[in-house]
Every structure is written in structure tokens, then in C-alpha cells.
Length: 429
Image 1 (spheres, rainbow, N blue to C red):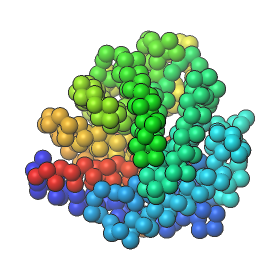
Image 2 (cartoon, rainbow, N blue to C red):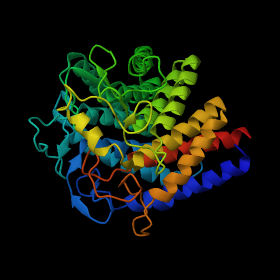
Image 3 (cartoon, one colour):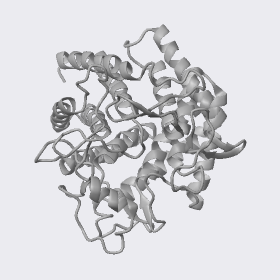
């Protein structure tokens, strides 16, 4: 990449981070009474619809503010970083007090009211309705531990991680809002566990070096699980496979989730680099390249929410799986264009370019850049933060994605990571 383009992109993304994303969220997300954050805004960003707090989102906010506090760029002053760390502490303390079902019961409540009292999700029979929420809390506490030098937060993350591992092994866990029959395995589980384990490994390197070897073994397991079972020797990741690790011949097993896949690729590149497994990076890059090709909408542009693993709309028989909630999500929303999918793809294509030097990734990145920044940033100058979901043709639509929240996690995380990547490239010139 030319030095002039690197400089141009650094300026662009710094402006996006400070004058669009942080402009929207600060101070409107802050709960100065109870701690934590509000994010149950409508898609337009105009109205706060609820003061409830999803543990899933609270953990994501903590990670973001902790990451901003230790950002490896010159974007923020030391004083500003200290402010971000204080914001992260607010959410960390809220979760420390309210996230667990009970003292020493290392399972996370999924939803609370604004004061932290547990609430049941509609239709749920328990407060711990998603192990994904636990994973976001682990990542939050591990990152905060690093940013604040706080060993207590690392210990909390490690205990919760051990609980998650035990539940995954026993099969006694739920995955709202993506329930799946025990007859199948979801790519989302090893995917998020690779990211969570990497976060915990970074914190353990400082606070608990003796645990690092075990965490690296676990990282290797998730890397191999995804490459050997969900990709299965092909340059594409299927979102669902059988519990026996076999590919499924129906629509459920023949679809891919381009956003998930491209997000997972950068998780696994980080894992491969931690493990010194350079041979895995070329294979991961090949999967990223094919995922972009399969997921790109040749009619309207942008990446489809779900696609057939060879490209185009999802297809295949539905016999025996028609009642699976995940299948219904695929059928109903395959053509949606989502904000987070494109932010993840921007980072992954740029990362793959820096790791391989292949010009195809820069072409894909520029194609994504053009589509993303003419589609998702909100033109309303009172909002600015991104439109979350569009119809296939790019027209904004009002629709709940996963949770009834407006969530800055993906785009802000990706903008931060892109900036760090660009700064490292600039330093090499």
C-alpha cells in the first residue's frame, strides 16, 4: 500500500472513530447512577426504547473502552485514555456485582434491569439463556485486567472461562438468540471461544504465566476444529455441521455466514500467530478470499447475511430441519445487509493483505470500503453512528438483529484494529 494511501486512511478512520462513533455514544450510553451502559436505542439512534441491560452488550462495552484506553496509536492523549479506562471500570464494576446468577455460581445472567436485577427473556425458563453472554464477559474482564493492571479481573475471567468450558463439555448450555438442536454443532461456539481464549491468554501472560501453555493448547484445538470440521478441507466455513462433525446435505448445512466467517478468520490468524503456526495463515487467507467471493451480492453489491457455500442465495433441501430456528433465520434474512458484517470484512481483508501481500485482498478491501461508507454511516448529523441493517438493495430497514439493541461493538472494534494495523504499516515505511 502506498504511504499516501496509508496516511489518508489513518485520517479517515480517526475521524470516523472520534467524530461519528464516539460522538454518538458519549455521553448518551452512560448510566451515571447504577454504572454500566444503555444501548437499547432504536435503529435510527433517536430514541432510547428501554433502560434494560443485556450482559452480552455490557461486556462488549467494557472491552471497547478498555481497548481504547490502551490503543496502540497516537489518536488519543494520555488524559483521554485515562477517561476511557474509567468508563471501562464503570461497566466492569456493574458486571462484577450483577453478572453472575449468584455468588460463586459461575454462570451469567443474560438480561437485567437498569439497576442490575435479573430479568427473564420472553419465553426463557432461566436467567442464563446464552453462553455467548458469558464469553463476552470473559473477554471484557481479561481486557480490563490488562488495561488497568487489575489481577482481580483476570481471576474473575479465568473462573468464568473454566465454567464455560465445563458447560460446553457437558452440553448443558443455551445459545440465545441462536438456538440449535443438540444434533448439530454451530460454528459460533469454537469461533467465539478462539477469541475469548486469545483474550485470556494475553491477560495470563501478565498475571498467570503458568496457565499460558494450557490456553495455547485450547487455542490450537479451536483453530483445528474450525479448519478440519467446519471448513473440512474446503476454502469455506459452513455455519452448521452435524454433532458427529459431518457435513450436512440440507440447507442448514450448506449455508455460510460471510460476516461470521470473515470475523472468525482474523480470530484464527491471531491464534495462528500466537501458536507460531504460519502454515495455517495461508489456508485462512484462502478461506477469507473465497468467503468474499461467495458472499458478495453481484446484483446490488455488499455482502449477503447468509449465502450458499458456493455463492448466491442459500439453497438445499429442508427435510428434517424445517423447524430449526436457525434455518428460519437464514431463510428470512439471507439478503439483509448488516453493518457489522461489513466492518468485520474491512478489517479481515486488510489484515490478509498485510499478511500475504496478495493484491486481490486490497481489491476486495477497496470494494468493501466503497460499498460500506456509502451505505451504513448515518447521514443525520445528530446521529452519525451507523445504520444497523438495510434491505438487500441497501435501503435502511427497521428490524431487530439478534438483540433489540444498537451495538457499537463490531464497528468500533474494527475501526480501532484497522487504525492499529495502519499505524504499524506506517512505521515500517
